[in-house]
Structure formats: C-alpha cells, structure tokens
Amino acid sequence: MKNYILRDENAVYYECGFSCDNEIFLKFSNEAFFITDPRYTLAAKESVKEAEVVEADDIFKAAREIIRKSRVKKIFYNPKEWALEDFKKVFEKLSVYAYAKSNFSQKKRIIKTKEEISKIKKAVKLGEMAFFEFALFLQKEGENRSEKELFFEMSAILSQKGERDLSFPPIVAIDENAAKPHAEATKRLLKKGDLILVDAGLKYERYCSDRTRTAYFDGFINFEKEQRFKDRKIQKVYDTVLKAQESAIKAVKPGVKAYEIDKAAREVIEKEGFGKYFVHSTGHGVGLDIHELPVISFKDKNTVLKENMVFTIEPGIYLPGEFGVRIEDMVVVNESGCEVL
Image (cartoon, rainbow, N blue to C red; front, top):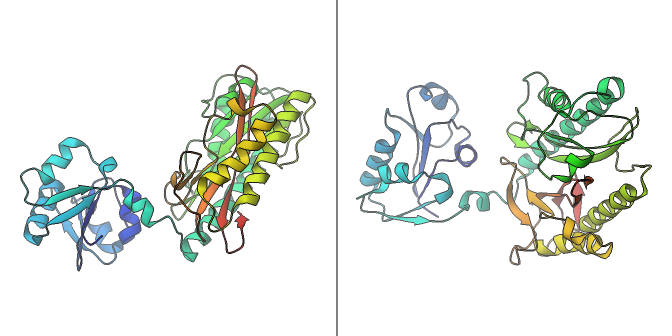
C-alpha cells in the first residue's frame, strides 16, 4: 500500500518510532507526516524517524489539508481505529477514496524481525522472573490473602514499582473463580489446598509478554509445568491441558495452517471428554499489541504459519462452579518447528 492513514498508537510507533495519545500518521509513496498537538511536538521532533512532524491544534483539519494538497486518489485506513465523527472530520467531502482495510498494520507486523524477537524474548524472561518472585511471595505471605491483594502484589512485581509497563492487568484466580477465562479479582482468600491460576505479562521496550500457569498451593508453590494436586479430577484436567499444549507445540512448523495448531490441542481435550469446556481459541499473536496476528483458532482456515511469527499456545478447561486450568507459553516459528520462549 502506497498511501495510508493511522491512528493506533502501536501502529504509528511501528512506522516512525514514536507515538502519543493524540496523533495522526500519514504515509504517501515518497513522504510521511506525524501530526500532533503542541503538547507532544518537542518529544515527537526528538524521536520520530523518517516522517515530518506537523504541529496542529486541530489534527483532523491538518490531516485533511495534507491529504488535499497531496492529490492522492486513494488512501487506506483501518476502520477499527476510527470513531465515525473523527473520520468525517478528515474525509467528508474530500475528493479521495478512503479504502477500509481492517488490521492492515497488524498484517504488516505479523512476521517479526530479529530485533523484535530479541525484545520479546527479553520481555518473556522478565515475565518469568516475575512469576518466580510471586511464588516466593505466596509461600511467605500468600495464605489468607484475597485475590484482590494478590492481584495488587503481582502487578507491583511485574512493574517493579513503575519501572515497567504491564502487557495487561494480571489475572489471579482461585478455584471456582479460575473457571472464568478472564476472571476479575474478588475477596476470595487463598487457603492451603487451593488451585490458583495466574495470567500475566509485561513489556520490554514496548514489546509484550504473556504467560499463564495453574498451580497447587499448600504453603509451598511453584509455577513449573509439573504440578501435583491432591484432587484426582483436578489432576486429570491439568494433565489433559498440559498434554494438549504439548501436542499443539509439536504441531507448529512453517507451512502448517493456524487452525491445525488449534485442532491439535482441541482433539486432546475432546478425547478426554472436556471439549465443551475449552471455550476460546488456542492462541494469539503477540508483539507491540498483546493480541496480534496470527489468531490460532479453528475459525481461521487461511493463515499459513511462517518463520518468525510469534504467538501464544494456551489451551484451557473451565468447569463452571468448580475450577479452571490454563497453561500458556509464547513460541516463535523457526525453520524446523518452533522455539518455546
């Protein structure tokens, strides 16, 4: 695409190395413009690469004028980035064809560079260390703490008192609350004998990590994949989810379609009779956004895996009113299969 307009912060950052919460990025065949208001002009001029920084009190009016002067005939935009009113401010009665193309920036970013993969690996490593630190906290002080307190503590560990940004608000869920894939923290207290599910990630130079572990708390706890529960049903579910994840990881290789990875995990879970309790896709891309392309889902019959795609593999089983189990790792596709990050 020669001509396009962006509003999403991560999409803009990918293009020029800077973004803010009030911006429009325009790209034409031979020139680019980063439009923002006076609050961000100085920072933009210090950081924006390969684009002219344009200061404007009304960024929509400025974008409209630049497009008009450019005399381009067609410009692509992602409809998911625009409020209707803002879109009209730029394009209404403008003699250019605005062509809607969803997620075109994410499609552009689906294959990660070596530099991006290096940053993602760093984010994953820091995230792993946070899980280790959280386990130590749980052993020393976790008993009789509420999910809300544990959520706060995990957030503090991930951020290192504001040094790092989080990929998303962490999920800390105990027993029956873990049966909700996106559980919100409650006043439920952690007791010996409980199952605890933790889903969390952090950013390194804007690139995200994402990891989920389900563990047994008996005063001691770790977030290794080998877990032993006293309850036989929980153990069966846990072992099924772990086997499903291992099966999906083994299925990853260049040339395989994304839905086949989902199928590899889903077949294991269905064989054990828990198919209807696996209620989400097997994975999603991760990069500047916590949810990127590719989507590892039975719904996507077209996407073919290629080297340097990065995504999660996170099967789960959720039994309403009882408990839930999810195990998640990030992988990068390589020439012969994948590397678990």
